[in-house]
Structures are given as structure tokens and as C-alpha cells.
Image 1 (cartoon, rainbow, N blue to C red):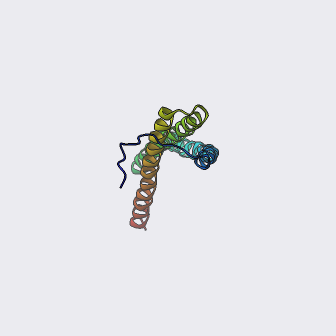
Image 2: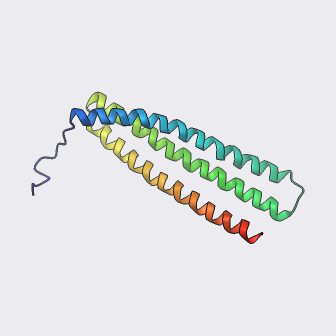
Length: 141
């Protein structure tokens, strides 16, 4: 097996550059979807908080509305942070290709890693919320 420290440079083929350019295009489209996915829970969260403040129903429903609204707002902020890392990945990978800049490539890959970690956290949170809400609905039946 070849010693990896003997050749520290990584050369990117023309095929790899073309694939990275395609990745930039698809990342922009995915980023647009994330903007929409951020606005929806943000709106729902603020709406639930607003309705809870002016509701004259059961106290437990008011508390449930407030907590749910806060969870939606926090989830929206997590989605925003996820989208931020996706946009930074796109911007840095584009710059790395254009100027043949290794530092930008490193930064782009770091942002891509952060994007995947946050995407994993968002996915786990969705499943957790579905599980919790399913339990709440079944316990009230």
C-alpha cells in the first residue's frame, strides 16, 4: 500500500470538476426547498404562540400551544442553520473550482459535513416528534 504522506496533493479530474459543478446546481435547488421548509414551521410556530396568548380555553391547551410553537420556531432555526451550511458549501465549492483554491475546497467540504450532521439531526427530530405526537393522540383516545 502506498504511503499517503508521500503525495499530499490531490488532483481533481475534469470529470470530478463537472460533477462538482452539477452538485452546485442541485445544491442551489435544494437550498430553495430548505428556505420553504424553514418558512413553514416558523410561520406555524409564531401562529401557535400568538393563538395561545389570546386563547381562552383550557390552560393545558394553552401550554401545549406555547410549547408546540416554541418547538416549531426552534426547528425552523435548525433548518435555517442547515441551509446556511448548504449555501456555504455551494459558494465555496464554486470558488474552489473557479480559482483552483484548495483552502476553499477544504472549507466547502467542512460545510458539507456540517450540513449532513444537521440534516441528520433534523430527520431524527422529525421522527421523534412524530413518535411523541402519536403517543399523545393515542393517549387521548
